[in-house]
Length: 62
Image 1: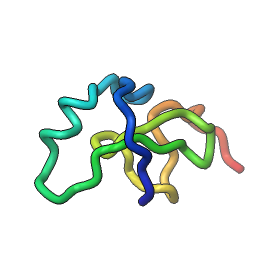
Image 2: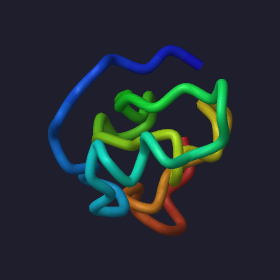
Image 3: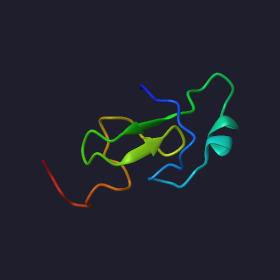
Image 4: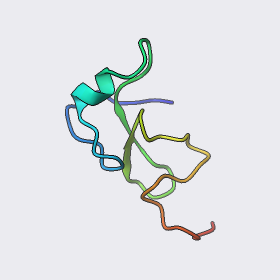
C-alpha cells in the first residue's frame, strides 16, 4: 500500500493526521486514493485496493 504524507483529513473516515499518527508503530500513516471510485482513504479505513472503500457505490459491480 502506498500512502502520501498529508495533513488533510481523510475523506473516507474523517481521521486527522494526528489520529493517523497514533496508529500502530511502524504502520504507514498517510492518505491514498481508492482505485475504484477515486475517493481519498487512509491507513485507518483502507481495506486494501482489491476491496471497495466506504465511499464506493454499494452494489455497483464492474
